[in-house]
Image (cartoon, rainbow, N blue to C red; front, side, top):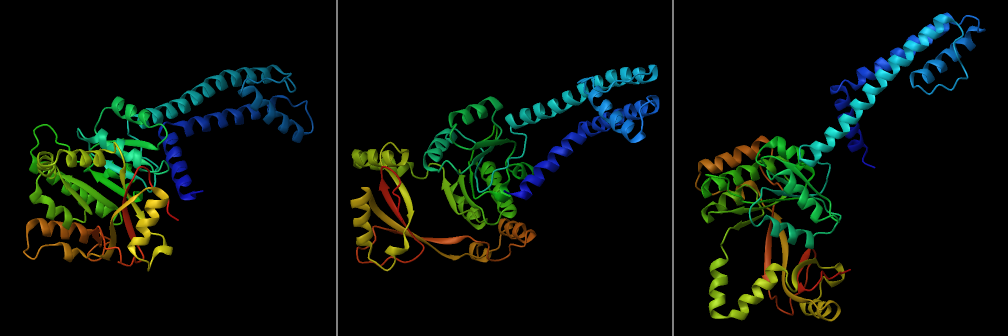
Length: 393
């Protein structure tokens, strides 16, 4: 059990209770019990010894306040009965206020959670920052590929009804959302960005916003996310290809420029219609799909041909490439030789968090159609085409 997380939740809960004056009501209930006990103790002097009278006074005050009324202990004096009547009325009022206030706290928290106003508690989750007209398709593909155990958190400004609809569409997955501007640090804190494993930044365009302004907002968001969680892996979408170097310098691992592959697909459709259909089938997941698999240690030092044959015979999977992660890049590796205002801004943002040199981003080396006699090495990944994800062990 994560005791730190439990402690944090309890602190948050008691802060909410204190804000709603629930603790004051608790003190009021305890005060009534104390006054009832004192009244019974002073008025029912015929009960002896005093230790017995005190015990009965406490028990009588408790059952009278909660209107249980067992009848095993009753006041016999007029004063004691007046104390009892006062305790009944005061207890009825105080307990009604207490239960109503506690109920309102839970209702408010549920209301805020349904509208994305409460902090999420997910860890090692995937963040989808922003939204655009391809957001639903992205979410569909992501839910199809991700294990159910990996949480997904949306951060955008969609309506509560739309967000609840998305959550209802994937009941088997841990999908939650935070409402707000993903470029703001307080919103990212609510999304628990410090414990996230990956972030996807979508280039949704707001009303009256130019493509350059969208890219600037994405760059600022990427810098903010990276400064809050240096180990997170970021994938971002851009509108203008000339802004790609700035995102790469900000530590974004993967950058997709909107529409950059459209011309290749259209040209392929003219030259070979079947090739276009093959590409779209692979990219949309209508048929077999791409899968990245970590190569088991037992294949290390053996030729690519053996792995390829194993995948084909046991999983009906086609090996098309290999990739591996090289050394981690430094901040200076990513900045240009010619100083610019954007480079200085990026350097300053990383310096604010102490990330002035190695910060975890590794260079990925890719090989397509590797030679059959090439030997496999540790920490290599195989890219295959298969109907389902092959399970290698």
